[in-house]
Length: 153
Image (cartoon, rainbow, N blue to C red; front, side, top):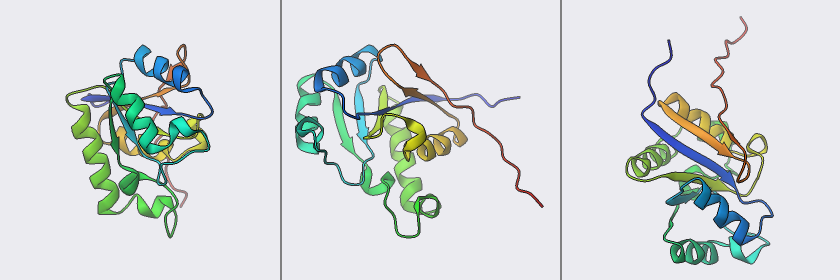
């Protein structure tokens, strides 16, 4: 029997989308707050650099919060080791707290979640009774099953 989930959080990668496309997708899914989990919140596309993105989102009444310092990648010892830290847990708790009162999407740069650390963040959120829906585009979104893997003896 699956435990009841209390929250839903979306996940999206900005990739090489235009700003208009990205904003349309956010609107389609009713996103009210984008949580940026990029460790280094910059991009070769000007509109996805932290300050530009924050301004564009705010002009559309979408809030922006940066949590790449807590949840972003490129960690000494690897990301899975980072996931065991209080810093990581604090980031997850902050995302969940934000999602209690608004529709939240965690965002990084990779469009495909399987190539991104959002997959680790998502699994950690799922283990904390949170549904995570990965947005591909304005027509496609999906939820990954939380696989229970047993270690070999």
